[in-house]
Amino acid sequence: MNGLRAVIVCLVLACTASVSPAVAATPGWSALPVPAAAPPVTVSDLAARDPAEAWATGYEHTADGLLPMLYRWNGTAWSRDTTFPGAGEPGWLGRVQFVGDQMWVLHNHAGEGEILRRSAGGVWSTVPLPRTLWTYQDFAAVPGAAWVVGEDDTGLKVLHYDGSGWTTQSTPDGVLYLMGITARTATDAWAWADTDTGTAILRWDGTAWRDAKVPLPSNSNVHTILLEPAGRATIGGSQYVDGAARTYLMTWDGRAWRTSYPPLGDTYTEAMVRGPDGALWLPVRSDRAFRSRYARLDGDRTTFSYGPKRTNAIDVAPRALARTGTSLLSFGTVEIYGSKPNLMSERLGGRP
Image (cartoon, rainbow, N blue to C red):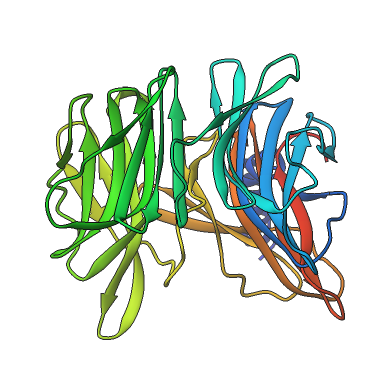
């Protein structure tokens, strides 16, 4: 019996030695203080250039209407930025992108659309849009090009900026609406569209928008397209089967599309990013009280992690994720019992 006990103890110690270092090396999510806004608030986007610079956008819901909201992360703390043109005037901020050494963000300024640009030295400038749209749906920018998509009284509009001026681009016949747009370069942009035959992926090659002929799952929609270096692309969306939605992912390796259905239910995948560990990360609906929940997708394996416990939180809702060096940064809202949703942020990795 003593010999058997000794063998069991040795096995336990061996397993502990093989598991503990990995567990100890895996950092947890920590809460980051965010200066309060006027609740309720809506978070639009989050983008990071490096560990010492990230920007989050959105808007406050005030008695006088919507007011734009901009926050900056400096690697240590969040602060609110009110130096941009129109900061105290009605409107909202949407998608934020880094273009060269500048930060660009889509700004609806009292119904008029413009692109705000902030230089590395902190100087702001604006690029007005050539026409007013009823709906400013999405925005993408890369060196040498930018796009704003939306609608006006004549229908769908794709506005293209080449660094000096604007043109209006046409889309293939049958395209009714563009739900989102993203770009890798000035001659490689992708958009997901509602067409008269269903959802489709369009691609800009520097000359025209064309149907990319992506074999999307039947009866599905698209939430986002994640473009990465070396030609890799990932599409996230929902497929409806027997009246219920399930998340799907499609990955392009430069040769073929591969479709998978990770165990995420009907998760909205817009906030999906490639993490510093090479896996895909996105916030998902939490199954634990007072805590946020994140999914990590590495090939066919899906695992979950949780943010720190927030006392009396009714809903903790990370809205956007960004990679900051070797860390992941989230930005969203938290609703504490008896109050309206306000801002929250969490970080995986880095200093607690």
